[in-house]
Image 1 (cartoon, rainbow, N blue to C red):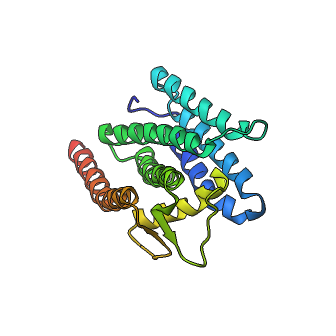
Image 2 (image 1 turned 90 degrees about the horizontal axis):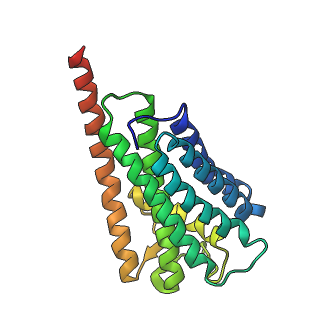
Length: 222
């Protein structure tokens, strides 16, 4: 991605990411439907962010198109192992966007509002990426996590219902709060939890150092 962004692209992406966190739990009676809506908004906002690089836009469009077909196609056609396929596709897309956001931040030369919003978007994208990873791990091995009595999850449940639980768990892990109502017990789950908790610590230190460095460079150049 060029070190250039469409007007308000990061702001729009940030708002769509916040909606994903807040809207579905607030409308619990139809949360799966609203998760689909929010994910669709994130996909479209991500593509808008990539509009200046045709190669990246094409790659993103193909992966996001597949994600949308799998997400909304379930309304008409029942697909076996849909949770597995949806997890893999969304991991691919969110990983792709994380990479491009990171590259944008590394290449930036001054700390403007685009950089600030891009940094916030990347932080939330990392959490969402791990949300899909945890969903995939749980789909493969339902014994990989243990849950408190107050927190339940249907092992045969809808993909979009599972995301609510693992979204919460991913943010708790990334911020190293660790409330203890969900615990990783499988080897793969513990490994990925360890990586996410380390990224959560490193991210703040590295991003702050980057912003301070480019701010100093900008001041000196003036």
